Amino acid sequence: MDFTYLQEHLGELVSYMREHNYAESYISRYRITISQIVSHAAEQSWESYNDVYVWYQSQQYKDCRLREIRAILGKLERFHLYSAYPDGKSSMSSFWDKKASYYRLSSEYRGLVDYYCQAERQRGLKETTVYSGSHKTASFLLALQNKGEDSLKTVTEASVLSCFFDGEKQIRGATCSKAAIAFFKVCMPLNQMACQRMISFIPELRVARKNIAYLSDEECSKIRAVLDDHENGLWYKDRAIGMLLLYTGIRGGDIANLLLTAIDWKDDKIHFVQQKTQRPHELPLTAIVGNAIYDYCLYERPRVDNPRLFLSCDAPHGALTSDGIGVAVMRIMEKADIRQSSGARKGTHIFRHRVATALLGNGVPRPVISSTLGQDAPFSLDPYLYADMVHLKDNALDVEPYAVLEGVFANA
Image 1 (spheres, helix red, strand yellow):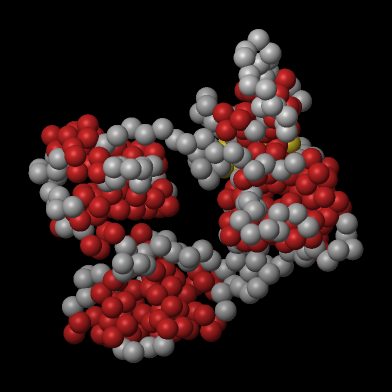
Image 2 (cartoon, helix red, strand yellow; image 1 turned 45 degrees about the vertical axis):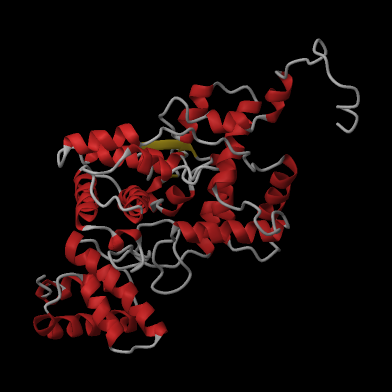
């Protein structure tokens, strides 16, 4: 691998980081790391950034320093191979987990994973989507390999089924099954017959339906009271994020990606491109949401040249990540004193469920709700319908005509 690319494009990287207000001390770490890589590349004959990281491990750095180097190398790898500049988020890299399934696969299986990743990237899928599909299937392939099946030509149906059922219970679910089937469909050009055999062996499992921990009326009232109370020490940023979640149902990732220009103050609209579907979406900007965003921009948003609406409080004030949105939700719930027990669901998606179920409860037609939530698939609302307890109770069947043992409903 030609690591001189880093030296040749160092100026571009530094300029970008300065334009986005990265601290000079942080930029200096990139300079030092690039200098070390370039100066040792020829003598070490590195073929990947994984090799570079292994070399750093051999230099007996302390764990804290190795973690920092690993993070920098991950971003340098993306800059070098995909021309992607640092964005304030953690970067998945080829060496992020040395114990990952991929690195223990046979050369044939690893070649399949490489082909899948390349094909899906060329198709325009997000890096996280590519990683998810390849990671699930790599785990399945490793399970096959551990059973002695290290080539698609010799894999048996019994071996495949044993990766999903151990004789007593199911050990892999529908997400793994679907990911593996999709994986082998993509890999058809490599070996059509072998991939078709694998698809025929993989069981098509049903997705287990889970109870959805949606926000109750009481919890929403407490959240609303916290967001309206300007004396409780909650940040303006948290209030604006909370209002967006509570009244629009926008996904947390989409809130993190909102641009300043997404807020159309003149026509009272919110315009953005959905991260999940890559489709443009438009929502009304209500007064209560607009006022919260305005207060954040006026009193708290850092005065930096960054197009994103929500920024981190710490220099270099980069764009807030999805994790940052989640932290804001946790602070809101802590102030509201709800969902503080261990394991209680606190993610942003419960607000989306709340908006959907509230609209359903008010008789809003399904197409309108789907349009509001920015959903395209016809069955996307089904999980929300399962949580619509009011209408489920209204449509419950009367059991009076059926024989029921005495005392069954005694404690109902």
